[in-house]
Image 1 (cartoon, one colour):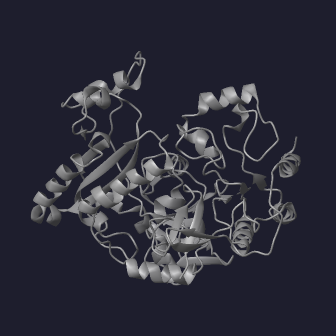
Image 2 (cartoon, helix red, strand yellow; image 1 turned 180 degrees about the horizontal axis):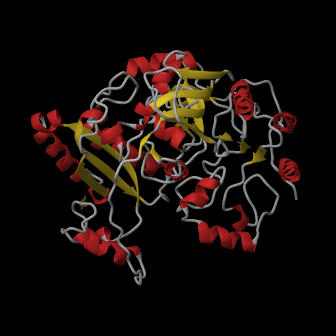
Image 3 (cartoon, one colour; image 1 turned 90 degrees about the horizontal axis):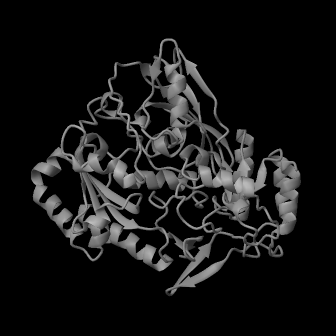
Length: 482
Protein backbone atom coordinates (compact mmCIF):
# COMPACT_ATOMS: atom_id res chain seq x y z
CA UNK A 1 0.00 0.00 0.00
CA UNK A 2 1.47 3.37 -0.97
CA UNK A 3 1.74 6.30 1.40
CA UNK A 4 -1.06 8.16 -0.41
CA UNK A 5 -3.48 5.24 -0.28
CA UNK A 6 -2.75 4.63 3.40
CA UNK A 7 -3.28 8.34 4.02
CA UNK A 8 -6.65 8.22 2.22
CA UNK A 9 -7.74 5.05 4.05
CA UNK A 10 -6.94 6.54 7.43
CA UNK A 11 -8.79 9.74 6.52
CA UNK A 12 -11.94 7.73 6.00
CA UNK A 13 -11.50 5.92 9.29
CA UNK A 14 -11.01 8.90 11.62
CA UNK A 15 -14.05 10.52 13.21
CA UNK A 16 -14.11 14.29 12.66
CA UNK A 17 -16.60 16.98 13.57
CA UNK A 18 -18.59 18.77 10.89
CA UNK A 19 -16.92 21.97 9.75
CA UNK A 20 -18.24 25.23 11.11
CA UNK A 21 -17.11 28.85 10.86
CA UNK A 22 -14.03 29.11 13.00
CA UNK A 23 -14.43 30.74 16.35
CA UNK A 24 -12.17 28.69 18.55
CA UNK A 25 -13.08 26.97 21.77
CA UNK A 26 -13.81 29.14 24.80
CA UNK A 27 -13.32 27.57 28.21
CA UNK A 28 -13.90 28.78 31.75
CA UNK A 29 -11.51 27.45 34.38
CA UNK A 30 -11.50 28.63 37.99
CA UNK A 31 -13.43 31.75 37.04
CA UNK A 32 -11.07 32.69 34.19
CA UNK A 33 -11.99 32.68 30.50
CA UNK A 34 -9.60 31.06 28.03
CA UNK A 35 -9.49 31.16 24.22
CA UNK A 36 -8.06 27.83 23.05
CA UNK A 37 -6.37 26.60 19.94
CA UNK A 38 -8.52 24.45 17.66
CA UNK A 39 -8.46 20.69 18.31
CA UNK A 40 -9.99 17.59 16.75
CA UNK A 41 -13.01 17.58 19.07
CA UNK A 42 -13.96 21.15 18.06
CA UNK A 43 -16.22 22.22 15.20
CA UNK A 44 -13.40 24.45 13.90
CA UNK A 45 -11.16 21.42 13.23
CA UNK A 46 -10.35 21.02 9.50
CA UNK A 47 -12.37 18.49 7.52
CA UNK A 48 -11.05 15.98 4.99
CA UNK A 49 -11.80 18.58 2.32
CA UNK A 50 -9.26 20.87 4.03
CA UNK A 51 -6.53 18.31 4.67
CA UNK A 52 -6.47 16.79 1.19
CA UNK A 53 -5.45 20.04 -0.59
CA UNK A 54 -2.71 20.56 2.00
CA UNK A 55 -1.43 17.07 1.22
CA UNK A 56 -1.27 18.00 -2.47
CA UNK A 57 0.53 21.26 -1.67
CA UNK A 58 3.29 19.40 0.17
CA UNK A 59 3.59 16.70 -2.49
CA UNK A 60 2.05 13.89 -0.47
CA UNK A 61 4.23 14.57 2.58
CA UNK A 62 1.24 14.91 4.94
CA UNK A 63 0.48 11.80 6.97
CA UNK A 64 -1.96 10.83 9.67
CA UNK A 65 0.21 10.72 12.79
CA UNK A 66 0.10 7.09 13.88
CA UNK A 67 1.41 6.43 17.42
CA UNK A 68 4.59 4.41 17.34
CA UNK A 69 3.11 1.48 19.26
CA UNK A 70 -0.03 1.15 17.10
CA UNK A 71 1.07 -2.13 15.42
CA UNK A 72 0.99 -3.74 18.89
CA UNK A 73 -2.75 -3.01 19.27
CA UNK A 74 -5.84 -4.15 17.39
CA UNK A 75 -7.60 -0.79 17.73
CA UNK A 76 -6.72 2.85 18.35
CA UNK A 77 -8.53 6.00 19.37
CA UNK A 78 -11.02 7.41 16.80
CA UNK A 79 -10.02 4.87 14.15
CA UNK A 80 -11.49 1.62 12.84
CA UNK A 81 -8.29 0.68 10.99
CA UNK A 82 -6.53 -2.32 12.53
CA UNK A 83 -2.77 -1.80 12.20
CA UNK A 84 -1.82 -4.80 14.33
CA UNK A 85 1.20 -6.70 13.04
CA UNK A 86 3.01 -9.33 15.08
CA UNK A 87 6.24 -8.85 13.15
CA UNK A 88 6.12 -5.05 13.35
CA UNK A 89 5.27 -5.23 17.04
CA UNK A 90 8.26 -7.48 17.71
CA UNK A 91 10.54 -4.98 15.96
CA UNK A 92 9.05 -2.13 17.99
CA UNK A 93 9.60 -3.95 21.28
CA UNK A 94 13.18 -4.77 20.35
CA UNK A 95 13.93 -1.15 19.41
CA UNK A 96 11.88 0.67 22.06
CA UNK A 97 14.88 1.91 24.08
CA UNK A 98 17.00 2.82 21.04
CA UNK A 99 17.24 6.62 20.95
CA UNK A 100 18.18 6.85 17.28
CA UNK A 101 15.30 4.58 16.28
CA UNK A 102 12.88 6.70 18.31
CA UNK A 103 14.05 10.01 16.87
CA UNK A 104 13.73 8.62 13.34
CA UNK A 105 9.98 8.21 13.94
CA UNK A 106 8.13 11.41 12.89
CA UNK A 107 6.03 11.79 16.06
CA UNK A 108 7.90 9.78 18.69
CA UNK A 109 8.82 11.23 22.07
CA UNK A 110 11.78 10.25 24.21
CA UNK A 111 9.78 8.97 27.15
CA UNK A 112 9.13 5.38 26.07
CA UNK A 113 8.08 3.99 29.46
CA UNK A 114 4.50 5.30 29.51
CA UNK A 115 1.39 3.44 28.25
CA UNK A 116 0.57 3.50 24.55
CA UNK A 117 -2.26 6.02 24.34
CA UNK A 118 -2.96 8.89 21.98
CA UNK A 119 -2.02 11.23 24.85
CA UNK A 120 0.21 14.05 23.61
CA UNK A 121 0.82 12.63 20.14
CA UNK A 122 -0.14 14.91 17.25
CA UNK A 123 -2.91 14.18 14.76
CA UNK A 124 -1.10 14.94 11.50
CA UNK A 125 2.52 15.30 10.49
CA UNK A 126 4.15 16.91 7.47
CA UNK A 127 7.38 15.11 6.61
CA UNK A 128 8.86 18.32 5.25
CA UNK A 129 11.58 18.11 2.63
CA UNK A 130 11.64 21.73 1.43
CA UNK A 131 11.12 25.11 3.00
CA UNK A 132 7.94 25.37 0.91
CA UNK A 133 6.55 22.40 2.85
CA UNK A 134 7.31 24.23 6.11
CA UNK A 135 5.59 27.36 4.84
CA UNK A 136 2.50 25.39 3.80
CA UNK A 137 2.25 23.86 7.27
CA UNK A 138 2.73 27.18 9.03
CA UNK A 139 0.11 28.90 6.86
CA UNK A 140 -2.39 26.08 7.37
CA UNK A 141 -1.96 26.08 11.16
CA UNK A 142 -1.98 29.87 11.48
CA UNK A 143 -5.11 30.37 9.39
CA UNK A 144 -7.02 27.69 11.33
CA UNK A 145 -5.60 28.43 14.79
CA UNK A 146 -4.14 24.93 15.12
CA UNK A 147 -1.45 24.24 17.65
CA UNK A 148 1.87 23.02 16.30
CA UNK A 149 1.92 19.56 17.80
CA UNK A 150 -1.61 18.80 16.63
CA UNK A 151 -0.10 19.44 13.21
CA UNK A 152 3.56 18.47 13.38
CA UNK A 153 6.13 19.78 10.92
CA UNK A 154 8.96 17.25 10.96
CA UNK A 155 12.23 18.68 9.60
CA UNK A 156 14.24 15.48 10.06
CA UNK A 157 14.88 15.28 6.29
CA UNK A 158 16.89 18.53 6.21
CA UNK A 159 20.21 16.67 6.35
CA UNK A 160 22.39 18.81 4.08
CA UNK A 161 25.75 19.99 5.44
CA UNK A 162 28.02 22.21 3.35
CA UNK A 163 31.52 23.08 4.53
CA UNK A 164 33.08 26.41 3.51
CA UNK A 165 36.84 26.99 3.50
CA UNK A 166 36.26 30.74 3.88
CA UNK A 167 33.18 32.58 5.10
CA UNK A 168 32.43 35.87 3.35
CA UNK A 169 29.06 36.91 4.80
CA UNK A 170 28.15 39.46 7.49
CA UNK A 171 29.92 39.25 10.83
CA UNK A 172 33.53 39.52 11.93
CA UNK A 173 34.59 36.11 10.64
CA UNK A 174 36.63 35.10 7.59
CA UNK A 175 37.57 31.61 8.70
CA UNK A 176 35.96 28.30 7.80
CA UNK A 177 32.27 27.62 8.34
CA UNK A 178 29.49 25.10 7.74
CA UNK A 179 25.88 25.42 6.62
CA UNK A 180 23.86 22.88 8.63
CA UNK A 181 20.30 21.76 7.89
CA UNK A 182 17.64 21.68 10.60
CA UNK A 183 17.45 17.86 10.60
CA UNK A 184 21.14 17.15 11.18
CA UNK A 185 21.80 15.35 14.46
CA UNK A 186 24.88 15.74 16.60
CA UNK A 187 26.59 12.49 15.62
CA UNK A 188 26.03 13.19 11.91
CA UNK A 189 27.50 16.69 12.13
CA UNK A 190 30.58 15.64 14.08
CA UNK A 191 31.35 12.72 11.76
CA UNK A 192 31.18 14.95 8.69
CA UNK A 193 33.30 17.61 10.38
CA UNK A 194 35.98 15.07 11.29
CA UNK A 195 35.93 13.72 7.72
CA UNK A 196 37.02 17.07 6.27
CA UNK A 197 40.58 17.50 5.06
CA UNK A 198 41.90 18.80 7.33
CA UNK A 199 39.38 17.83 10.04
CA UNK A 200 37.43 20.60 11.76
CA UNK A 201 35.38 20.79 14.95
CA UNK A 202 32.05 22.46 15.73
CA UNK A 203 30.71 23.33 19.17
CA UNK A 204 28.02 20.77 19.98
CA UNK A 205 26.54 18.75 22.80
CA UNK A 206 27.20 15.26 24.09
CA UNK A 207 23.91 13.57 23.17
CA UNK A 208 24.33 12.14 19.64
CA UNK A 209 20.63 12.22 18.69
CA UNK A 210 19.92 15.89 19.49
CA UNK A 211 18.97 18.00 16.48
CA UNK A 212 21.90 20.40 16.42
CA UNK A 213 20.19 23.27 14.56
CA UNK A 214 17.00 23.16 16.62
CA UNK A 215 16.60 23.45 20.36
CA UNK A 216 20.32 22.93 21.00
CA UNK A 217 21.42 26.20 19.38
CA UNK A 218 18.27 28.13 20.22
CA UNK A 219 18.65 27.09 23.85
CA UNK A 220 22.25 28.34 23.92
CA UNK A 221 24.21 25.15 23.36
CA UNK A 222 26.60 23.96 26.08
CA UNK A 223 29.16 21.30 25.23
CA UNK A 224 32.67 19.89 25.77
CA UNK A 225 34.28 22.68 23.69
CA UNK A 226 32.46 25.52 25.46
CA UNK A 227 35.42 26.57 27.61
CA UNK A 228 37.51 26.97 24.43
CA UNK A 229 35.11 28.21 21.75
CA UNK A 230 32.11 29.36 23.77
CA UNK A 231 28.50 28.24 23.64
CA UNK A 232 27.05 26.74 20.49
CA UNK A 233 25.05 29.89 19.73
CA UNK A 234 28.21 32.02 20.01
CA UNK A 235 29.50 30.45 16.79
CA UNK A 236 26.38 31.11 14.69
CA UNK A 237 26.85 33.41 11.70
CA UNK A 238 23.36 33.34 10.19
CA UNK A 239 19.98 31.61 10.16
CA UNK A 240 17.65 30.74 7.31
CA UNK A 241 14.12 30.56 8.68
CA UNK A 242 10.41 30.65 7.90
CA UNK A 243 8.44 33.14 9.97
CA UNK A 244 4.96 32.56 11.38
CA UNK A 245 3.67 34.72 8.50
CA UNK A 246 5.10 32.19 6.05
CA UNK A 247 7.93 34.46 4.91
CA UNK A 248 11.42 33.20 4.07
CA UNK A 249 14.00 35.29 5.91
CA UNK A 250 17.71 35.46 6.57
CA UNK A 251 18.75 36.56 10.03
CA UNK A 252 22.34 37.69 10.51
CA UNK A 253 24.35 40.66 11.75
CA UNK A 254 22.95 42.94 9.01
CA UNK A 255 19.60 41.45 8.01
CA UNK A 256 16.92 41.11 10.70
CA UNK A 257 19.49 41.53 13.49
CA UNK A 258 16.86 41.39 16.24
CA UNK A 259 15.70 37.95 15.11
CA UNK A 260 19.34 36.89 14.75
CA UNK A 261 20.02 37.94 18.35
CA UNK A 262 16.93 36.18 19.74
CA UNK A 263 17.47 32.89 17.89
CA UNK A 264 20.94 32.66 19.46
CA UNK A 265 19.90 31.36 22.85
CA UNK A 266 16.50 33.03 23.31
CA UNK A 267 14.62 29.74 23.46
CA UNK A 268 13.46 27.02 21.06
CA UNK A 269 10.25 27.08 19.00
CA UNK A 270 9.64 30.72 19.82
CA UNK A 271 10.48 33.20 17.07
CA UNK A 272 10.52 31.33 13.72
CA UNK A 273 11.06 27.87 12.22
CA UNK A 274 14.76 27.46 11.45
CA UNK A 275 15.64 25.77 8.15
CA UNK A 276 19.44 25.97 8.34
CA UNK A 277 22.25 27.60 10.28
CA UNK A 278 25.66 28.84 9.15
CA UNK A 279 28.20 28.31 11.91
CA UNK A 280 31.91 28.78 12.51
CA UNK A 281 34.16 25.74 12.33
CA UNK A 282 37.52 25.46 14.06
CA UNK A 283 40.73 23.47 13.54
CA UNK A 284 40.81 20.04 15.12
CA UNK A 285 42.29 20.12 18.61
CA UNK A 286 44.17 17.31 20.40
CA UNK A 287 41.96 15.27 22.70
CA UNK A 288 42.54 12.35 25.01
CA UNK A 289 40.13 9.83 26.44
CA UNK A 290 39.83 6.48 28.10
CA UNK A 291 37.62 3.61 26.99
CA UNK A 292 36.42 1.20 29.67
CA UNK A 293 35.08 -2.12 28.40
CA UNK A 294 32.69 -3.95 30.72
CA UNK A 295 31.84 -7.60 30.17
CA UNK A 296 28.17 -7.36 31.07
CA UNK A 297 27.19 -10.62 32.70
CA UNK A 298 24.84 -8.88 35.11
CA UNK A 299 21.09 -9.22 34.85
CA UNK A 300 20.14 -5.61 35.59
CA UNK A 301 21.47 -2.07 35.41
CA UNK A 302 21.96 -1.87 39.17
CA UNK A 303 24.61 -4.58 39.07
CA UNK A 304 26.40 -2.96 36.13
CA UNK A 305 26.57 0.52 37.65
CA UNK A 306 26.85 -0.23 41.37
CA UNK A 307 30.65 -0.25 41.62
CA UNK A 308 30.92 3.05 39.74
CA UNK A 309 28.51 4.88 42.00
CA UNK A 310 29.85 3.37 45.23
CA UNK A 311 33.56 3.64 44.54
CA UNK A 312 35.01 7.04 45.46
CA UNK A 313 38.24 6.34 43.61
CA UNK A 314 39.47 7.05 40.11
CA UNK A 315 36.54 5.28 38.43
CA UNK A 316 33.97 7.45 40.17
CA UNK A 317 31.60 8.82 37.50
CA UNK A 318 29.16 11.13 39.33
CA UNK A 319 28.41 11.88 42.97
CA UNK A 320 24.65 11.48 43.37
CA UNK A 321 22.83 12.38 46.56
CA UNK A 322 19.52 10.78 47.52
CA UNK A 323 18.72 12.24 50.94
CA UNK A 324 16.73 10.06 53.32
CA UNK A 325 16.29 7.26 50.77
CA UNK A 326 16.73 3.68 51.88
CA UNK A 327 18.99 1.20 50.08
CA UNK A 328 16.14 -0.24 48.03
CA UNK A 329 15.19 3.19 46.66
CA UNK A 330 18.78 4.12 45.87
CA UNK A 331 19.32 0.87 43.97
CA UNK A 332 16.31 1.27 41.67
CA UNK A 333 17.63 1.93 38.14
CA UNK A 334 16.02 3.85 35.29
CA UNK A 335 13.84 6.25 37.23
CA UNK A 336 12.15 9.19 35.50
CA UNK A 337 12.12 12.63 37.05
CA UNK A 338 11.09 16.24 36.63
CA UNK A 339 14.35 18.15 36.37
CA UNK A 340 15.16 21.60 37.70
CA UNK A 341 18.23 23.37 38.93
CA UNK A 342 20.37 26.44 39.06
CA UNK A 343 23.74 27.79 38.00
CA UNK A 344 25.88 29.67 40.51
CA UNK A 345 28.72 32.09 39.79
CA UNK A 346 31.90 32.33 41.82
CA UNK A 347 30.46 35.46 43.39
CA UNK A 348 27.30 33.56 44.35
CA UNK A 349 29.34 30.86 46.03
CA UNK A 350 31.55 33.37 47.82
CA UNK A 351 28.75 35.66 48.98
CA UNK A 352 25.79 33.29 49.35
CA UNK A 353 27.22 29.86 50.06
CA UNK A 354 25.14 29.52 53.22
CA UNK A 355 21.94 30.33 51.30
CA UNK A 356 22.76 27.73 48.63
CA UNK A 357 23.39 25.12 51.32
CA UNK A 358 20.15 26.09 53.07
CA UNK A 359 18.25 25.66 49.79
CA UNK A 360 19.62 22.14 49.38
CA UNK A 361 18.73 21.27 52.96
CA UNK A 362 15.26 22.74 52.46
CA UNK A 363 14.70 20.68 49.31
CA UNK A 364 15.79 17.49 51.05
CA UNK A 365 13.26 18.03 53.84
CA UNK A 366 10.24 19.15 51.77
CA UNK A 367 7.05 17.01 51.60
CA UNK A 368 8.37 15.04 48.60
CA UNK A 369 11.70 14.23 50.28
CA UNK A 370 11.43 10.54 49.33
CA UNK A 371 11.27 11.59 45.67
CA UNK A 372 14.18 14.04 45.60
CA UNK A 373 17.65 13.54 44.14
CA UNK A 374 20.51 15.98 43.57
CA UNK A 375 23.49 16.37 41.30
CA UNK A 376 25.94 18.98 42.57
CA UNK A 377 28.99 19.82 40.52
CA UNK A 378 31.32 22.37 39.00
CA UNK A 379 31.60 23.96 35.55
CA UNK A 380 35.20 24.60 34.50
CA UNK A 381 35.39 28.23 33.37
CA UNK A 382 32.71 28.14 30.63
CA UNK A 383 33.29 31.80 29.75
CA UNK A 384 37.03 31.46 29.23
CA UNK A 385 36.88 31.08 25.45
CA UNK A 386 34.16 33.68 24.79
CA UNK A 387 33.76 36.01 27.80
CA UNK A 388 31.10 38.05 25.99
CA UNK A 389 28.83 37.52 22.98
CA UNK A 390 25.99 39.65 21.62
CA UNK A 391 23.16 37.15 21.85
CA UNK A 392 20.26 36.08 24.07
CA UNK A 393 22.11 33.46 26.14
CA UNK A 394 21.70 33.94 29.88
CA UNK A 395 24.96 35.48 31.07
CA UNK A 396 25.03 33.04 34.00
CA UNK A 397 26.34 30.38 31.61
CA UNK A 398 29.62 32.27 31.12
CA UNK A 399 30.16 33.19 34.75
CA UNK A 400 29.07 29.99 36.46
CA UNK A 401 31.39 27.87 38.55
CA UNK A 402 28.89 25.47 40.14
CA UNK A 403 25.51 23.92 39.51
CA UNK A 404 22.77 22.14 41.39
CA UNK A 405 20.40 19.88 39.45
CA UNK A 406 17.30 18.79 41.34
CA UNK A 407 15.22 15.78 40.35
CA UNK A 408 11.69 15.08 41.55
CA UNK A 409 11.26 11.39 40.81
CA UNK A 410 8.10 10.14 39.13
CA UNK A 411 7.15 6.93 37.37
CA UNK A 412 5.31 8.59 34.49
CA UNK A 413 2.14 6.72 35.40
CA UNK A 414 0.85 9.22 37.97
CA UNK A 415 -2.50 10.92 37.54
CA UNK A 416 -2.53 14.31 35.86
CA UNK A 417 -3.32 15.96 39.21
CA UNK A 418 -0.33 14.31 40.88
CA UNK A 419 1.99 15.27 38.02
CA UNK A 420 0.90 18.90 38.29
CA UNK A 421 1.48 18.80 42.04
CA UNK A 422 5.01 17.44 41.56
CA UNK A 423 5.74 20.05 38.89
CA UNK A 424 4.58 22.75 41.28
CA UNK A 425 6.90 21.43 43.99
CA UNK A 426 9.84 21.43 41.59
CA UNK A 427 9.17 24.89 40.15
CA UNK A 428 7.54 26.90 42.90
CA UNK A 429 8.74 25.25 46.10
CA UNK A 430 12.21 23.82 45.50
CA UNK A 431 13.05 25.99 42.49
CA UNK A 432 11.99 29.19 44.24
CA UNK A 433 14.85 28.80 46.69
CA UNK A 434 17.39 28.60 43.86
CA UNK A 435 15.83 30.96 41.36
CA UNK A 436 17.36 34.20 40.19
CA UNK A 437 16.09 36.68 37.63
CA UNK A 438 17.43 36.13 34.11
CA UNK A 439 18.74 39.03 31.98
CA UNK A 440 17.18 40.49 28.84
CA UNK A 441 13.68 39.11 29.39
CA UNK A 442 12.07 42.40 28.32
CA UNK A 443 14.10 42.50 25.08
CA UNK A 444 13.15 38.94 24.17
CA UNK A 445 9.49 39.68 24.86
CA UNK A 446 9.61 42.69 22.54
CA UNK A 447 11.17 40.60 19.76
CA UNK A 448 8.69 37.78 20.34
CA UNK A 449 5.75 40.17 20.05
CA UNK A 450 7.17 41.54 16.80
CA UNK A 451 7.79 38.20 15.08
CA UNK A 452 4.94 36.14 16.56
CA UNK A 453 2.29 38.50 17.99
CA UNK A 454 -0.54 35.94 17.83
CA UNK A 455 1.27 33.09 19.53
CA UNK A 456 1.51 30.69 16.60
CA UNK A 457 4.56 29.10 18.27
CA UNK A 458 4.68 28.02 21.89
CA UNK A 459 7.28 26.84 24.36
CA UNK A 460 6.33 27.05 28.00
CA UNK A 461 9.46 28.64 29.44
CA UNK A 462 10.02 31.38 26.85
CA UNK A 463 8.97 35.07 26.91
CA UNK A 464 5.54 35.80 25.46
CA UNK A 465 3.81 32.71 26.82
CA UNK A 466 2.90 34.13 30.23
CA UNK A 467 -0.82 34.38 29.41
CA UNK A 468 -0.98 30.87 27.91
CA UNK A 469 -1.75 27.69 29.81
CA UNK A 470 -2.15 24.01 28.96
CA UNK A 471 -5.59 22.77 30.04
CA UNK A 472 -7.55 19.51 29.90
CA UNK A 473 -4.75 17.41 31.37
CA UNK A 474 -2.10 18.95 29.20
CA UNK A 475 -3.84 18.43 25.87
CA UNK A 476 -5.15 21.92 24.99
CA UNK A 477 -3.22 25.16 24.68
CA UNK A 478 -5.32 28.16 25.69
CA UNK A 479 -4.73 31.88 26.20
CA UNK A 480 -6.33 33.74 29.06
CA UNK A 481 -8.80 36.26 27.65
CA UNK A 482 -8.15 39.92 28.41
